[in-house]
Amino acid sequence: MRTWAWILQRASGAVLVFALGLHWVVQHHVSPGAEITFAGVHLKLQWLLYLVSDVLLLAFALFHGLNGLRTVILDFRVSPSAAAVLTVVLVLVGLGALLYGVPPIMAFLRG
Amino acid sequence: MYKPRGVFMRNPDLVPAYLRPGMWGWILHRVTGLLILFYLLLHIWVIGRAAVSPQAFDAIMVTLGTPFWRVLEVGLLACVLYHGINGIRIILFDLGYGIRVHRAWWYATMAVVVVLFIIGAVHMLMPLFAAVVSPAAAAAGPASGGTALVAGAGPAAAALAAL
Image (cartoon, rainbow over all chains, first blue to last red; front, side, top):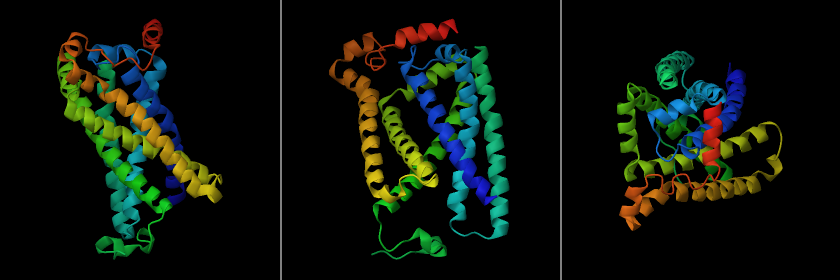
């Protein structure tokens, strides 16, 4: 589990550099971009690559962030049972945030 | 010298005797990571609440365009730039590249972060300065300074619309 947590943290981090870079550039620097509007986001999400990268960004960022938080907490040498509870809680938080985060993207997509 | 206290007593690796550049790099990576996670959860929540209708979303975006939130967003840029670029350094170390020159690499990382941050921060805060220097001009054109950095913004939007 520790090895996988480590490898997946690196892999998701590498993906995030690109997905987040694209997210930032598209949201702030691609016209209509001076002001972010619902209509503008709707238009941008029609671009399939951006839609896919935004959904991946949501999933990978949640994994990377929560797995990172787990690493930080485990560095304080918590007991194995506490670590197990922590893992379950973080998985639930991640799944909850994912389920909360996908419908808005679909709402923008529909317009 | 400082003495480890509380939960920091649990792991001696967390409290080295001296804070060298590599340790500062590690601390900054953790702090920025936690701040970005906090922002991410807030971002998902705010966008989820805002996306209920175009009117609600656009109203929240106007609020987030005010100076207070713009300045916070510049802080987010600093955290993300550092965490991302230092993250690339960490991945390269794990692959076995650059460990012998890790200190030089740390300074190079900071240099790249600072340069990109200054470019990004100036660009993000430009509309605010424009509003202070010339309120009338800023009010007349909401796009003033906003899209100036990317010269190809117009064609890019056209290409986007075509897709």
